[in-house]
Structures are given as structure tokens and as C-alpha cells.
Amino acid sequence: MQTDLFGNIIPMNVEPETQGWSHSRANALESCPRKYFYAYYGSKKRAARNLENKTHLEFLAKMGNRPLIMGTIIHETIDYYFRRYKAGSNHSLNQLLSHAFTKLEDAFALTLKMQAAIKPIELKPDQKLFKEVYYGRIGNISEFKEGIKQKIQLNLTNFYTSEDFEFLRRGGKMKGSMQESWVRLSILDFAKVVGKLDLCFEDYDQNFIVSDWKTGNLENEETSLQLMIYALWAVEARKIDKSRVKLYKAYLQEGTVEDLEFSDDHIMRAKMKVVQDSERMKYLHKYGIDGNEAAFTKLPVRGKICEQCPFEEVCYKLN
Image (cartoon, rainbow, N blue to C red; front, side):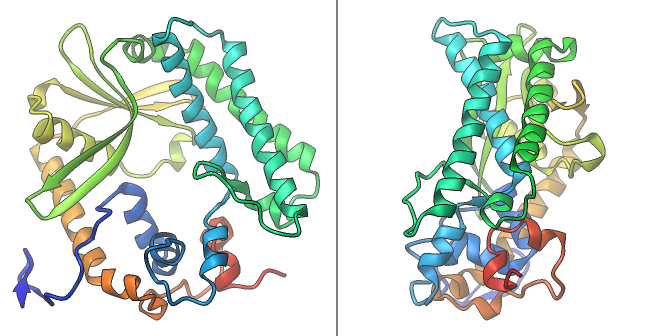
């Protein structure tokens, strides 16, 4: 037997967590443990192999909802803009919108094709289906699609034209900038952290800029833990002096940027939150690997979280 950082006993036969802590993983566990089980164990080929509905869970993992797919398209298009610029092509706003709308049309076409298919069609890892469309919850698909197009156009137009974003557009074009890049670090040699930052670069004043693209309303945005983790990565993994690290939330829908100040206390609280989450994940890991879904409680009442969850069907039968 061994003890963790908080003096709790850990059985030696518990397998080590291999995926590590991530913001999305922690959110899934906090919002609904059963969703966490399905997302990180039930729908994975190398875990929970005894589940009778495993093939179905793997399929359901391909379900996305409007905010998720829209946000993914916007992030991918901004990344595309910077990649094309570095390759020698300065795309216009219309070219960006065309690229994004093509992605949207492809997602709708694939969803409708899958909906009509007798046998499931094998999807690529980055492909998602509109859950609302697949289950026939949308009365007018054309209006639904047009609403998403308008949101995408607003977000990308603000990205391309807002004066508040000028320093981010300029920084993203720099040769050494990072976009949609995976970062990893270890906290106290205990918690392994993985994250995908939206934009990072060193400006001409030697500031180390880290920015998150936000596609939701200001009042709907969650806490700043993810940016705190990137600050921790910059300070501890990249050895950047804390005074040089500048954090920003770029609200695409509003066309505004909010700077996020932080201190040593903020970083320490972020560390402790990750360690505590990792404790819980490691405790549950054996149950996940073994396919013991009863160890992961589901929400007692079907609600908004369930409606947005790709695995709703296996928890609550659709009408």
C-alpha cells in the first residue's frame, strides 16, 4: 500500500492514469460521472471491454451539439487562417467564411447520410454528427443551419476586423507562434496535465502571450482555470518569468478582449485543483478500466446537461 499527497491510501494494483488531467476531462467528471465513464472508458476500444453496448457507445461518442460543432469549426478556421498565412497566402474574410461554411455543410451532410444509413458509416476521428439533427429534434433544418451560419459569420468577422484583436492577429502570424497546440506538464511529479492552447506567441516587447478564443457570450463563460494551467505551463515547463506571461480571453462574439491577471496564489490554487481532480480520477480509474459503470453515478433527473450529452440515449431512452 502507498499514500497519496493527502495521506489517503492507494491500492498498489490501481493502474496509473495514462491520459492525464485536462480541462474537458475534469469538466466531464464534475458535470456527470456517468458521462465521464462513457466518454473516457465506455467508448474507448482499450477500456471497459466487457460492456455489451460498447459498439454503440463508440458510435455515440461521435455525437456533437450545435455549440460544440460550431466552436470547433470557428477554432479550426482561425487556425487555418494562420497556417495559410505562414505558407504565404493571406486569406480574405470571404475566403475564411467559405472555408467555415464548407465545414458546416459537410457536417450536416454527414449527419443526414448517417441518419438514413441502414448500417453505420465509419467516421474519421475529427468528424462529429449534429445530435439535434440525427435524432430529429429540429423542425426546420434550414433555419437551424442558417442560425449557425450567422453565428459563425459574426465570430469570424469580429476575429478578422476587430481592432481589439489586432495584436492577436499580428502575433498569430509570427513565425514562432503556436496555434491549436498540445502542451503537457507534470505537477508535483504527481498529476500529468495535457491541454490544447488556442494561441501563444512572444511579442516584440518580450511578453509571452497566451490567448483563448471564446465563442460564447461573456456571461456564459466558465472559470479561468484553463488559462491558469497555461500560465503554469509557461512558468514551469517553458521557464518564462511570471512577469512576462500575459493571459487573454478573446470573446469572438463580442469582438472584445479581456486580460486575466494572476498571482502566485492563483497558480497554487490551480495546481491544487488539478491535483485534487487527479486524485479522484485515479481512484475511479480501475472501475473505468473494468467497465463498472455503477461506480459512476448519473444525474438523478434528466435535464439540460443530458440534452447536450452524446450518451443521453443509453441513460434515458429518447421519446
